[in-house]
Amino acid sequence: MTQRLDGRVAVITGAGSGIGLATARRFAAEGAKVVCVDLDPETGAKAANEVGGLFIQADVTDEAAVRDLFQRAVDEYGRLDITFNNAGISPPDDDSILTTGLEAWKRVQEVNLTSVYLCCKYAIPHMQRQGKGSIINTASFVAVMGAATSQISYSASKGGVLAMSRELGVQFAREGIRVNALCPGPVNTPLLQELFAKDPERAARRLVHIPLGRFAEPEEIAAAVAFLASDDSSFMTANTFLVDGGISGA
Ligand code: NAI
Image (spheres, rainbow, N blue to C red):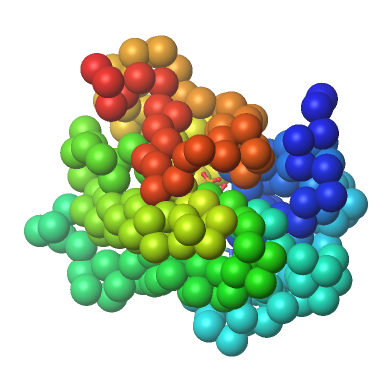
């Protein structure tokens, strides 16, 4: 594997599972020092241990915790080159505008959208000091198109992530900080498996809309994140990066 990320320091939120875990492995394989952030102390510590990085247990909706985690990452490794804002939760059951309660709506916005606002807010000053940085925010294909399944709070949160990423990409481009939104299609992770467990027919409904005829594996998403993190994507910012098996093109 080429060492595109040699000497780079990367923070990954939600590193204990799914896309975050696969990306922690990929970043480490490409030479990065990885700071694994997760709410779950067991899976987060396991991931950090596996990739030889640092584990920070944090709730990414807690402003003080987010500020401290970026400071700790810089204290430990001396710099911050990459931030992958990936932690998120799935939609509540029956996430229709007619049924989703206000508290459930707010919780999804808090974890999926406010967390990205907080992580960007506290990552960017470190990158400004270096005059360089790459931020990748996990949105979803549902940020750019309606889904075949009802998920109003989730889609709205991911639309917010996409809009915020564009805005920040434009605002900080002249300071050498690139900000891109990653929009995966359905990925075979615990988050998706949980949704399918609740509604077994959901998988079939989804598959119909995926031209490649299958769900992504987390490693396929991690490969795209590594590209966005690396200088191979040096002319890309404020971008909507779809890795969706063709859903949005069909
Ligand atoms: P996952 O459930 O496998 O992993 C999410 C991780 O985030 C978990 O380790 C969890 O402990 C952590 N986390 C949740 N809330 C947190 C909080 N408040 N503070 C810190 N950590 C927290 O999920 P998956 O599938 O890997 O999803 C990662 C991201 O990708 C999410 O933002 C999700 O919305 C997005 N996504 C997932 C897709 C899929 O089909 N799996 C498709 C498109 C986007």
